[in-house]
Image (cartoon, rainbow, N blue to C red):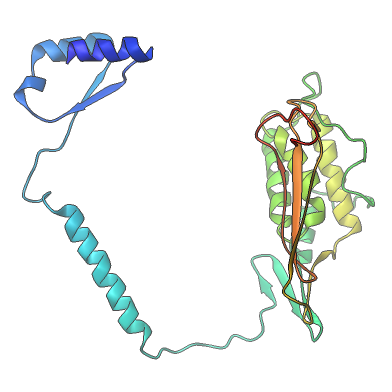
Length: 260
């Protein structure tokens, strides 16, 4: 065992943190214990075979199968349901069902969020981010409360579920949650000012639409000035209804616009 452990550490140039063995006497002796103690290696023993342990997996598997069969049998029987009326508000989403279609937004959640962060009286603005805005680490900038910054970002991320127009701006600001500076929180507050100006924006799903799926995608090249990574964006429409959207920084650095 000692020779094997040394061989493994030399071959892979890494330290062994733990060794697991059974309870055989060849593994339970003072010589091996002293060696593992000197090397800082933890010795773990597998649980001994007991009548209680034998067939644990088989018993659990059988229990799951019986539970599934019981559910299938009960599913065939009748059960009572209560009609609670037309869905109008659910988890911060306001659903307005009309003859022409369905409109979903988060106006009430937005007003509560603006009040919580003392931005309700802010002056509105027409765009969530300046066209030439370039956020960096700003290591010499004034530090701000990271807890407040993360709370603002978290609230905005939840709002993105019905507001694809702020997805890119929120994603860019979310990159600096570890060490936010004053320039970062000013960019976040601009998003809040944009929301003050557009409180009733949301998603519209018309009734008379086809089921053709169309997707659009685009990306910049080395748009992030910190690590030179690109940002990809995409949106998918089912007929005239927006059903999926994303804005995400790529995992690797692209060497050309074609690769991005």
